[in-house]
Amino acid sequence: MTAPVPVIEWLLASDPAIRWQVMRDLLDAPQAVWKAERARVETQGWGARLLSHQDEDGRWAGGTFLPSGFTARDWEEQGQPWTATFFSLSQLREFGLDPQSESARRTVALVGANCRWDEGGQPYWEGEVEECVNGRTVADGAYFCVDVSPIVERLLGERQADGGWNCERCNGSIRSSYHTTINVLEGLLEYERATGGTPQTREARRAGEEYLLERHLFRRLSTGEPADARFLAFLHPNRWRYDVLRALDYFRYASILTGTDPDPRLGEAIEHVRSRRAPDGAWPLDWTAKGRTWFDLDDGPGQPSRWVTLRAMRVLKWWDGW
Image 1 (cartoon, one colour):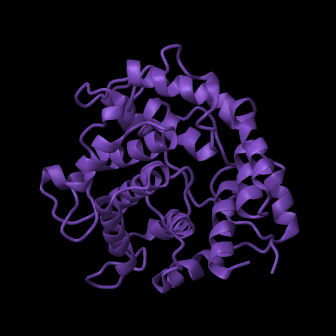
Image 2 (image 1 turned 60 degrees about the horizontal axis):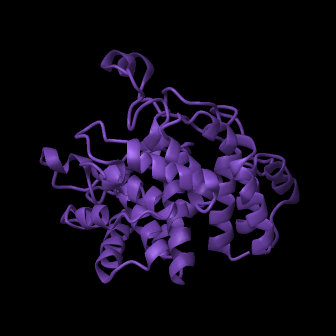
């Protein structure tokens, strides 16, 4: 089986942030080829555009989690904003900005020197208190070659008894959250890729995976009903939000990194992804989170999405072995 050529061509007729991942994940291009394309993220397209919005001190929008001057009324009227440093760094990781590039090294240094968390004023690369935020900070830091071991140690001590994590733990929650768990799992996996991990991080990651697998990625353990209808809808960018395609892409990456076979409990979610493919071979964007952004990455809900299609195709390629 080979990938549908027209869809591949449509994906390649896009931004370097998409093209290099198509080359690596769908076309099995030589490393030198996809790395040369990835290098263009720094100077062309969405990557260069996002870097152009960076403040001189290394931050974005003058803030860490929230833009400078953003108020509670702004949040109520506009929704959660996505333009400050925290979400911009994660977006650059998703684009694939080369961690060794001049822009990446400069950003890491400036953010470390000048960025403090809104919650308590802590230095950026020390993390803050919410597990969702710290999981994503670990993923970004590990990707961009920062030592985030202290944040990892904190996350290990915050795991729930059922195996996952929940940002509401500090408010008394004793059950894990799909949203928080996927953010922490992605962080631990990136940390493992960068450092090899530890027995403790690998055990915690497996326990978090089991939390999702027991639920077939979207069901309630108690009733078997879908935990949230939006878990079956495709979103991009996900930011902190969970959906089954995000989870499947995580399990694909983990399987490749660790050399393990796909777990059969992923099968129901896989078939859901397969069923959503349009006759033209692409997948639609179902929804996008409200809130301030620097620029759009898709044509809007209901339209074919290159990002969703890339993720769906590489997940199915991994599962089907083509």
